[in-house]
Amino acid sequence: MSEFIKDKEPFKLGLLDKVPSPEEGECFLLYQEGAGSANSVLINYGVRYSSTEIRHGRYNQKAIFSLEEKVFSQNYRIMMKDNNFYFDVTIKMSYTLQDVKVYFFQGILEEGDIQQAIRSIIRRQDGKWDVLGETKLQSELETEIEKRLKQYGGIRFKQLEVVVRPEADAEKLRESNKSKTVGIHVAKNETDEKIARNEQNERIIESERKLKSKQIEDMALMWKNFGDMGAIVNEYFKGKIDGKEFYNFILRARSEKMSMLQTVASNDMMTGNEILNELNKVLSNNEFLQIAESQQLSGEEAGKSEKKEAEDKDTEVSDREEEEREPNDEDAFSDGDYI
Image (cartoon, rainbow, N blue to C red; front, side, top):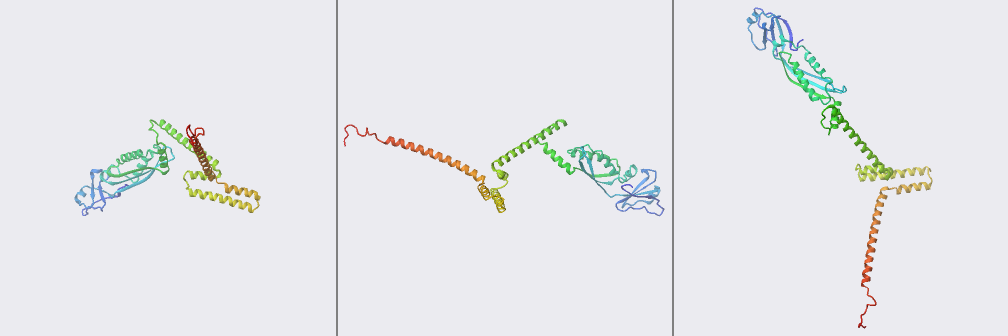
């Protein structure tokens, strides 16, 4: 059935009959079967026609048309070049009957014709576009659809809307490709672009390798200096935990060791001397205080050394001044001086 033709029936107007009047939103086409557009007349809603003219025309068929606007909206999927991803495509439009005689005598639009025409256009786009071809694909579809719709005479198409979007997984791939191509120059051809991409990927891999190697070296140094406390010290130096959290962790670690010693002692798993030795280790095992004390002692020794050196110099100067002030016994009195 046609998109706009609601019904067809034989037509005959008697001497006493009035010209039929269509309902609102409809129109009639009276025609002579096989005679073409020249022997036809259009009957519109709300218009009065002369019955004499209609009878003289000898029309023997009547077609009832709907003048309501039709809406088309369909979703499609177009396969990308790599066959693993798709573009999601939405096509919308509206259309109305504009010229009844042209539509009826030059090519009736059957139900499903638009759907079939657009599906054919969609299928021809499969495998032609990569994930970055969204805009070009949309433009191509708009051009092809508009060209195809022009073949349907007597119909007015309007508000054609074509929306093309990569599917969710393809969108992630596109964004990933964008981030990887930052800094890559515009390639002159496909081969240069592939080379540039490979070089960029190699630089990224090498940077990641160096970073991991540096992290391993830093962690090894922490472990060497701080033993099983190395990991938490590393977190503290990186600013991932504050001083209070760091201190609480140290307290918990020592508390756990003390609890373990109590369990060992209660089960007679170690001798008294062995337990005492381990207890002394726990109570004295504070690497951070030892380092701080070491640094403090070094500073104090250096200070003492400097102070001692300064005192020695002061003593030497005092002795020398004293010697200069002390009188010589032989020169104490000159000739002629008597007591």
